[in-house]
Image 1 (cartoon, helix red, strand yellow):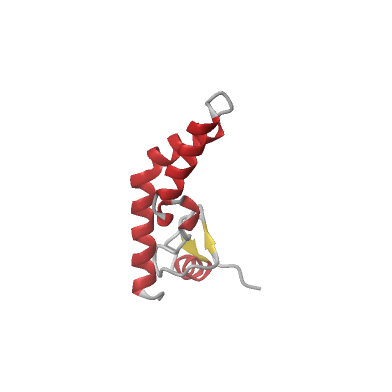
Image 2 (spheres, helix red, strand yellow):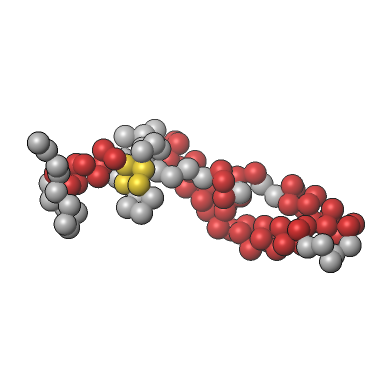
Length: 101
């Protein structure tokens, strides 16, 4: 199991990303638009920099839904390699069997 504080910190970041997503996307669009005057683009960049750092999507970490493990996580299943193997061994994932030879 991962530290509970690390998992909670990541959940807090995900909530911030969701909260500021629209505002961040609008400011990014303004700052990249060549038709907008340079002063407005600069102001948009300053406003973007003033937003909380943890509201950026790149600050989130993919974690296992079962254990909170940060490494070796399959994005599609939201499980770590270890959690996936355990669930497959117990037959909890349809169509997946543990390979052994």
